[in-house]
Length: 207
Image: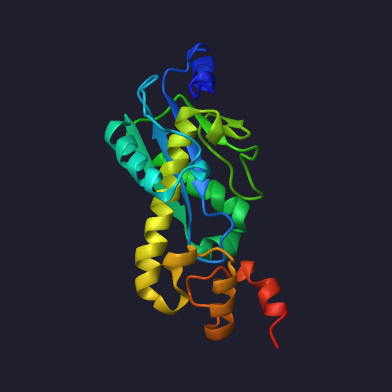
């Protein structure tokens, strides 16, 4: 599939500067939710560019370096576990995406947002935008954003959280609710990096 099809549609409507936006880490039990915003040069060829979920970790790392080197502008931001608990994950996702867009060195004419949601109960995407369901597999700009968000979050969890809380082995499960992660939660209980609002079912079944 040609990943530049959505961009061409909006370029033809006189939106010159387009920004892809995506988030990573909405589902884990611990750590921040990350978002990235990326403005790519028009129709640049980045071999292997695709939805981050369809790529190996090694390929994502390679593409991260290519994207950050060649993008006209890019920004990565996050919302913390504390903000996720205070706002809920949907609002926190919107907050992280707003922060990523605001961090760009040039304002986009239009943001292409992955998914179908552009607002929660308390936080909305404030920049001009459209939503694209499955956008990380349809749009080059969103695919690039999905890679930057995913790699940035994985790096943070595997280094920063791993160093702070080695007993949870964050580098292995990246904070997701794996069998190992639940076993370590049973053994040690939650740490400050855990999202309390995501642990309700785990807490309910504890003796």
